Length: 515
Image 1 (cartoon, rainbow, N blue to C red):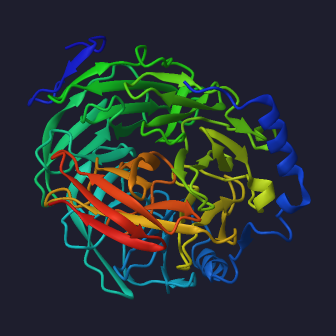
Image 2: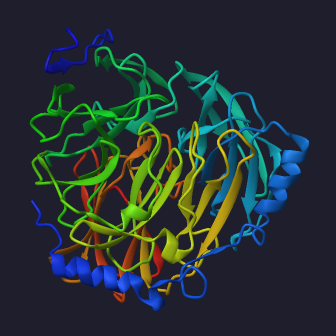
């Protein structure tokens, strides 16, 4: 096997078209954004800075007083103590002094009692399937060590394990060998596969050699061509890599991966894949990228071929520009619950809140919604989000401050007009309770042809925003607008078993388990 071989087979030894938005529509959108009612930073609906009211500002000030050299390097919203609320973990680089804050369910945070690891969270996942969220944390400088969660509500307790992964920061969890048990993908050298035993242990399973590329290799597992097998989107680079490099590998279901970057309509050099999601609501996974440091959307035809959507981002001329493309992640969600996908995007010196206007097009909303577009993202996360106060709207937590000084955190409460929503918790079988790889479809009641949402569960760390509603069980949020009910189906992976729920009422959490 050589690095240039198109078909890379993993061995046991480890060797291993959419039209742009019409001009008149763009003019209308720009006019709408310019209306006084849309300039909501001061008086209208948007996001309110509740950093003080939440208790986060006071907790951080006290922590800085005790640890004046604290290198804040990551933000995570995760349920640390198993009470069903999203807690806030403020990470520290290296052997620093991280700060865990417990949430009372109303968006008020207090320092956690008990013991917990004091570095950076890479992946939060219930590894041993005991109903509590385990943590994969920094080990040495960049590597990963798993900590088992033995906490009780109100008090933290994490137990260090011997399960580690080299020195790479980038990780992903997916059942790659299709045995029903989640596997662990991490970098260096190339992408290393470790097969899970379903109980929290892993054994070497091979690797995908990638040739002479620099770390970190960020892995996004997803089914791009709709054949039911998990493909791999890869992006790599470090501090000094400004343009980005990416590849797409298609999986034939037998652990054979074909470099399909050119076939996919993408360029390897100068393009960084930052996010994956169905942005135009057609049931196919699209790509959110930085191409020559510019934000772009590539739409998927359903067979793994991608076409750039011109002019997908309105108002981006006012946004902060990316410095290095190697940091950050774009996440598809619905920040205003209107039923149209939005994008939250964080990187090294920027934070973008992008409201979907339909068809894979987006409008830059930071100024209108009162959110700073500067983010001092460094080694790890500069953005996390979730419903911290239980009102059904997604709140934001992000960095401010210089990279080389004391960083501060802003907590933004979502005060956009209330609309209906639904959260779906798919629960897979033993060995993959987190339902990695499952496909969720939300449709109009009684009309399966009217797709509202499509999402595939991807569990990964890609330098930012990876704490995606990280409860003990995987949870996904969908805005419904004025709809009072929808139909929901989950296709589990790798079994292909499908479970459907009809007329699911809005403003609730529905749990769907694999038979």
